[in-house]
Image 1 (cartoon, rainbow, N blue to C red):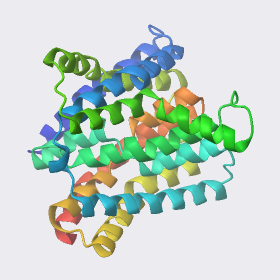
Image 2: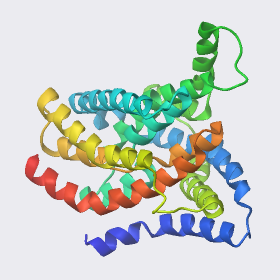
Image 3: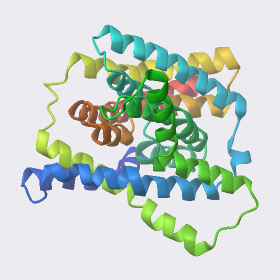
Length: 316
């Protein structure tokens, strides 16, 4: 499949995002309503998408444990490095540090990696274990920190942390993921009408989230010349440093090679996740920076994709 056909697969993304920007610019839809759309995606559509897809999947066939463990180790190292860099750059709010870790380590699976992998390999199955790791581990940690830092949390540190962990476990995204895994492993067969209903709602997650992002940026504006030093190092870490770290850890630390090494490096090279903006909007933390990072990292990742493809073909 050629480059033109690959870009054609991203046309729906451009349409949903671009219409949001246009309608907000022309004040047809208020930019302030982006939070309503983001809440719909975070609280309802994304959980439906995750539950249906996890329940339907063959979990045993999807996991190469050595490869996934290597990726998790690389992500753990990236979390530590990003957190240290964020603190060195003057970020003191734990929620702000957590959001920057999310920007630098988590990847845009559903909205970017899936069409890219279908284009390159004919299917997106290798992405799914990483998606589960992100939702069940990384997102759980991020949400716990976000909930812990909410101003309405009271009590001592232990009580606040316990309440934050419980609150994170009770968020729709985590509940949907865990429920999908449990029902997948149990001999439970859900009626097709139930699965179709989840799929119907879940299919709206991507366009609604992108539309919400477009509305927000249409109201606030996106300036390439106004890119901050912090945005630049986060984008550089996400699109260059993290893939290189993933390659080094997986190949030399865990002996991963062949197709799985290529898969993991390309997944790590994907841009910051759409959920970055949704989380920022939800918890009111660095919303403008998060929106800018989602878009700018997507552009950089798209430009670097041919180079990463060529590099992993030779280095793997």
